[in-house]
Length: 265
Length: 264
Image (cartoon, rainbow over all chains, first blue to last red; front, side):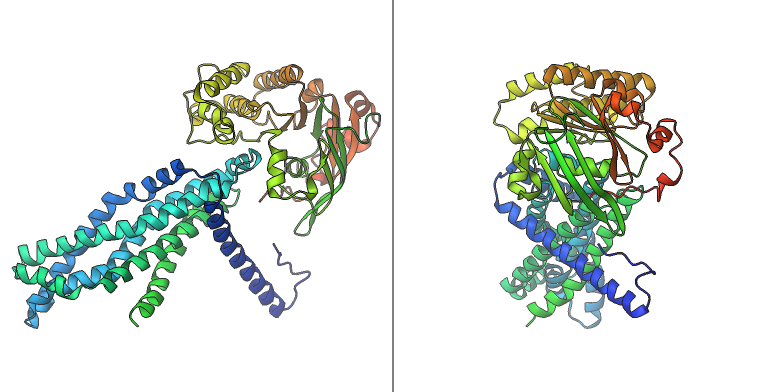
């Protein structure tokens, strides 16, 4: 870790250089952290017990929240979509609009944001507290690799849980759109499902799954990294948690743009 | 320096470590003989905890040599380090109990994770260790439900569960009242006598801790200013040490007042 001290670094240019080097240094540590955790996942000892526990905490425990957000997102889309489409006399297109926007875009992104808020923050806070109270050092001196024990299972569970949660979000969202668009606003019900069946292709579904896999990796990676490197002071854990949520959310939206532009080609 | 030289359980030669612009360890040399209690004392910020973190392999030095039970650990890779670590028990300043596990699960943890022992054997050993530290019947409680002194005792039980050869204690009595301090000291002394462990301890409890120590190392400005048996060190006319004993050390030695934090 290089330190900026005015006695050595005098000119603004040197200070800028030091900041750039610090930034590259931090990025390197960030990437190595992921690589280390992925390699550790392949090495024994294998702990399925830990994988299952993390899958429950990241996946199963987020189910209700994802379902809740899913149904309301679908309902809003049914309302807005039907209202707008009616102006153009295209009520029959509601199913297509709801399904495509959910599966391609809103499903992966909203699920990732909600799971970041719930499980990402919890991961960062838990690992942060363990770092601050020397529990991570305690694992090391017991000859237990803390990254393999704490981070690898979370990465695996995150990458596997996100696509499943996203799929559930999509299905519930489509049902929510039907509920409001057809049930409440009186759009034609058969056209809703026919529209979905004719427009929603395998590539749309695959695209949504790719996105959610990437988001799952980003959220668990960022949250674990921030928690694991929490500073040993009173505000260390809270800062790690905030940074984990903010950075995850920003990266989700940034990567969403780039993934979309790749997938639409 | 009677027992110094080779042959100690732990031999440290000219250890150096820098954090940023601060030379925290500035050529530390120390020998901790087998089956004795070596206590490291010194003003806060002198590098005691950082030094201990080099001995228990949480930090690696910039230069210098650490030989533990005949093995030069400064030359080992990660896998080999784990082998050396299995001879250790470590008691951290705050206990570092896993707060998601009960006291009994904490004590059992090293056995569950690192051995192939069966459940009944593990619970028998855990019960034994909990009884040894005076916590029998408390196994089902979570760390947050017991007092600070009990947490330290539970952490000591965890540190001892694999019958280590070397026990590292980082300020085992910090934050405890004098009665509890005495109880923990007695516990350390008894455990040491029963198991014949090599104990290396960092302590602030001067001079109470001298009663249970075999050897004292006085650390000052990143070096061992004094090092010998309790009698030798107490007889020393070293001015800084006398000031430290008299509680007057809180002057320039506080320096920045910051102890660099360990990071792996």
